[in-house]
Amino acid sequence: MSKPLFYGKQHISQNDVDAVLDTLKSDFLTQGPKVKQFEEALRTKVTADYAVACSNGTAALHLACLSLGVGVGDEVWVPAISFVASANCALYTGATVSFLDVEPLSGNLCVDDLSKKLARAAEQNRLPKAVVVVHMAGLPCDMQAIANLCRPLGIAIIEDAAHALGSTYINQAIGACQYSDITTFSFHPVKSITSAEGGMVLTNNPELAQKIRTLCSHGISKTNFTTDTQYPSWYYEQQELGYNYRLSDLHAALGLSQLDKLDDFVHQRQALASRYKQALAELTWQTSPTRGSSAFHLAIAFFPKDRRDQIYLALKEQGIHCQLHYMPIYRQPYHDVGATNYVRFPGAEAYFSTALSLPLFPDLTHNDQDRVIEAIKELI
Ligand SMILES: Cc1ncc(COP(=O)(O)O)c(C=O)c1O
Image 1 (spheres, rainbow, N blue to C red):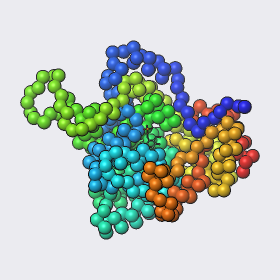
Image 2 (image 1 turned 90 degrees about the horizontal axis):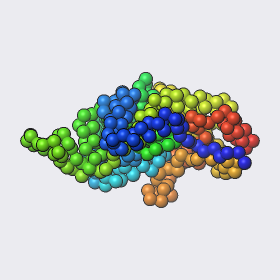
Image 3 (image 1 turned 120 degrees about the horizontal axis):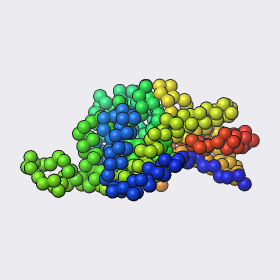
Image 4 (image 1 turned 135 degrees about the vertical axis):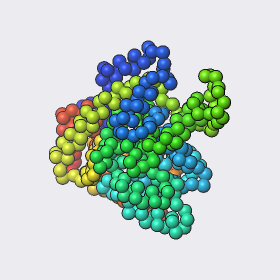
């Protein structure tokens, strides 16, 4: 059988290996210069004012919620289609989560649903503390419309951009936080760039940045103290309950080295996605961006509801491992809102029953991509 093809895979070059080895032989394996360099490089790349590296994208989302003061008694709204971390980050703080419907052909949150839900919540005096926005597969959400709805009501906006490093929205990189309070990234191996595990929190708000940095390292500050006393240089203060969510220098060295290749990776992904669309023009594909560009974390195609799982299995038998991103979070046993409530999310239900992510990663060769294309042509 031909070699297995997965929906995503990292690309590691010799200079990535060298960067990690150099750091391994250096004085600092963690809390050294690489983390700062990675933060600075990514912050500059996406034109945000502040960046805090952390251990993964889930920690980044948790730090975002904590820094915004999300906690017990608060509600956070989350798109129904996303990885579970987009909802769990709010639950970790003691807040509750309520789901928003998504557009069936984009997987991005439905602005109309948000608007209606906000109107109802305003009447009942139950507005959410924050809304998590997910750029599904890298497709930028309509951030301007979302900000126009949320900002006048004082609702914080967290962009979960785990899929969208390298995407743009109205001529700005996702991560610039023009229409949000905080943006988070993940550097898991299937993402635009990898640091193995890793994440980053970006913001333009200096107070939030300070809070995120402190919470990321036990709630300890080494620079801003509770009194003006002159302390010796060994002094530090724990001022709140934080976490050890720090990224190590080894991971940061890999992330930094990968960041140099981000533009190439994104172009390769975009070119491969166009090639799929041309070769399989008879399929319905995830909506194209109208006010920006997608980094194409995933290539999402839609198949008839009654055939999707059969096509998934037939491809798998040929060593082509597609994936469904995602089953609605509200259907997960832990989050389940009850089957009778699924009808409240017609967009998410339609998306869930038809979507499939095809293999897409920078190293996918045209030969391998043709294998996927031919196999799908045979099946449809
Ligand atoms: C949309 C989304 N948010 C958050 C995360 C969490 O990132 P990590 O795996 O780095 O914790 C992921 C990871 O797959 C994701 O896809």
